[in-house]
Length: 461
Ligand code: TRP
Image (cartoon, rainbow, N blue to C red; front, top):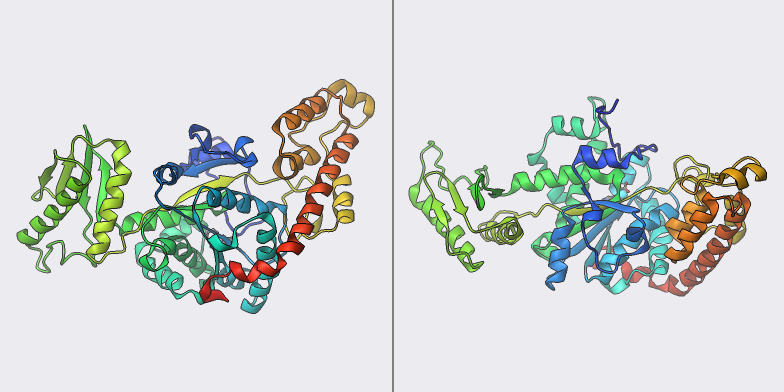
């Protein structure tokens, strides 16, 4: 059982919530190990729980360098509370200075959900972007675009297909012979989404972080693999002290790297490339550099793991100067899924499992009243045994969405556990908070309605 392989299917309506196994099996990093500036309630409460290479982004931010944020939305149904978590993450990055790009996955929605491009656009604007404005994203620092109209995204997706194959798609996504090819192309378009903000046309080389639910991690694994495979210079921890740099010879660069078609090596070209690498390392401040063109390696003995990112960025820049794509593998952060109101998975196709951002207060109240409870079956038992806030939807929704005050939350958590607060009372606390939150949100949506257009990138208006 324990070593059984987990699968993440980004298009499935059921997802594993065995987060520690997900971390372990897919090599995510635990977010506990990083100190975050001004953590949001989602960070403080462990709801955003894992990441890949977030330290690269935070370092960049700390040094006053730029970084980008990219995420996407699937325009297929109404926007619900679960979708707002990604936006909370985006907002946090935006406050830290990240420039934000948001992909409307209209091609993906058409391919996998049968939603027309016109309908996708309408849903994206009226359901999603309208709520983003109300949730407090800054329209001046946010660019929303459509997959169907941004050719750089499609071009990258197509070209980078060279760096993967059907076997990898079978192992990551479980695709089979009968899988529709539009469905196969959707992840490649998403690779284009994720990588295009670092192209020179869309902001240039800088770390890009992708905040998502953990269901999207397969796409990040794919993208990161593709980006590394496309790199011309490999940078590794040396066995022994220092950092080891090697060349990755590919169709695109073979001639430049001195690999002649007849299999011979053009020593002058190799020496030239090695000299350029050394020059770049010197610019970073290293003086002790062992360059060995014959072996095809360069070792920087005094470089440590900490220097790796700076070296990587420098050599990606060099790769670009030489005509390569110079792609940096994206960073990512992941949030837990909030449980559905009924105790099953939250889904926009099952309205009873969630609260939509445009539900009226009456509907919200009714939904919370019926929500799955962690209380005991009789009052007598509840007083004696206490309730379980970990599965109590009313409590969970306060923790995920409605309550900002950690101290108060800890209080009602313990009062619930020891039976002081009854299940019905917990629901009423949640209804009060939800009413306040939703009324505020409705008001903000009315106030920001006119801003929707401003969120759109110029190629998307
Ligand atoms: N596949 C995502 C979803 O189902 C939408 C999406 C498209 C996306 N491109 C993206 C998400 C890039 C993050 C990054 O919701």
